[in-house]
Amino acid sequence: MGYLEGDWHDVIDVDSGDDDDDFYGGGNSDTPMSSMDSDEDCGFNSDSAPDYDFISNDSDDLLHSPQSQKNYTILKEEDIRCRQEDDITKVSTVLSVSREVASLLLRRYNWSVSTVHEEWFSDEERVRKAVGLLEEPIVQFSADEEVTCGICFDSYSFCEIRAAACGHPFCRACWQGYINNAINDGPGCVTLRCPDPSCNAAVGQNMIDDLVTREFKEKYRRYLVRSYIEDNRKIKWCPGPECECAVEFVVGSGNHDVTCNCSYGFCWNCTEDAHRPVDCETVAKWILKNNAESENTNWILAYTKPCPKCKRPIEKNHGCMHMTCRSPCGFEFCWLCLGSWREHGRGTGGYACNGFSVTKKEGAVDETERRREMARKSLERYTHYYERWAANQKSRLKALTDLHQMQTNHLVRLSEIQCQPETQLKFITDAWLQIVECRRVLKWTYAYGYYLPENLDTKRRFFEYLQGEAEVGLERLHQCAEKELETYLKAEKPSDDFNDFRTKLTGLTAVTRNYFENLVRALENGLADVDSVGTCSKTSSKGAAGSSKQKGNGKRKEGTKHDRSGKQKVRNSGS
Image (tube, rainbow, N blue to C red; front, side):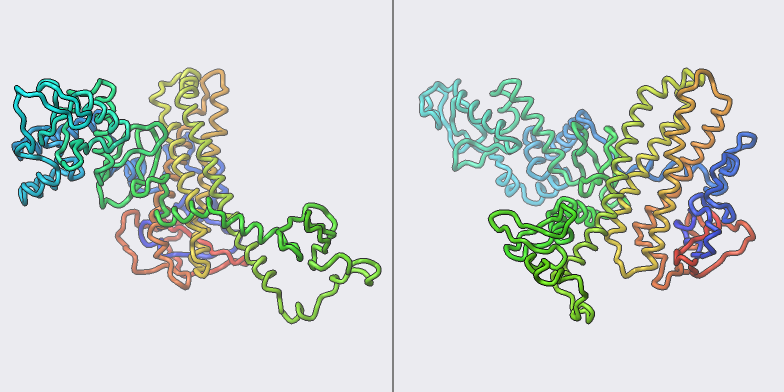
């Protein structure tokens, strides 16, 4: 697969249909892909050390996927609370304010410590006014006099009255009701203000903790934690079901696909399922198309005809051509020509629509028929891509189920049968994880193909060739991990060839990972190395990682040819 990383080997070689190169395996162009069925041909001969020359000289780079170099951090609830407390401490220390005030400032400026510092030192008075931090109370009253609550208007002694920094007096019961209602209303409680409509004074956490029950305190703290995530542009919640982790992302680091501790993979940018190599805009269009009513409209246009009288769409569900519209219309007509059925009896000389009219001979096709045909073709094209997209999604979900079953049940059983510790069976889990990832990538390549412009014929055929090779290679890995493994799970004693199976599955996992990683990079680059006439660009980086080495007769073929079927073929001249 080195051709995808460097200059595509500057080769798109087309041979006759007899010579199908092992494009997926990569290394030897003289080895057809079908020959990899045997362990020996795959380089999986137990009598010798594994030979993965078709992968790369640097096996460490391959076995440790670039995705392992994470550009994100998974945060559990305790991690979030610790970060939140650390940020409050930083602001409190630098600005010499209480932790309560520091928390209010951070909430105002979306938990950005640097922004708080900049705004505070730029104009402290303006910041205090915006946040509701008053240096002196607006209302003052003596401790010896009774005070009237501003909500219930009852009189209370000084010790029964509570007030925020503004000094507006309210009784304890009214404060509790006010705060409890605010917490029940949702996350807005973290920016609570004085109950007096004319006052902007902030209500801090200390006052809330002093007045409400433990249940409401916990609710408030949860909202406080949520605000730390939801107001922070660098952190987002994992959208996985019942997951309470958050993901901190290094903004501007490129790849947005992340995988949470709950094993849910998603795009940090749009929070949809992870969708490399397709961009977020294409995913949004694809999801909208899948959910839109437009496809229903296309189906109606393609597979129904309007009643000539009432224009209601009718689907033909019987064999004869005699159609009768439902009540109250009841019009009888011919399905073929939409003419009245009265004109199709013996009294009118037989069928009136069996002859080919002059207007049709001359190409004067009815506009409705033209629209119907266009809708039919559009629907068929969409159905082609959607069915394969959905099939790979279904296969991926099944693989996830199989992976879970493998981790919880089968590995223990296999360890007992083969007399090997579970740590030495990690290669099986790695294979299943790779299958899940590759199914996800393959699924989204169909959305990529749907939106690939039809006028780019060479690029489309090249993309479909790469996609087809990915399908073949992934099926080979999936079958090995699913079918061949069953033999060892059903065995009653250690198998002599289990180590051969280990070598084969490990090799297939590595090859598949390498192919798909390079495929993703190539598609994200828009297959830029394929020019308008179908040859590979010579201006691509010759020194890129994974540059090719000569194999076979050492000659590199250039240019584009086609076999008799017109299929563009690619020869991989080294990895």
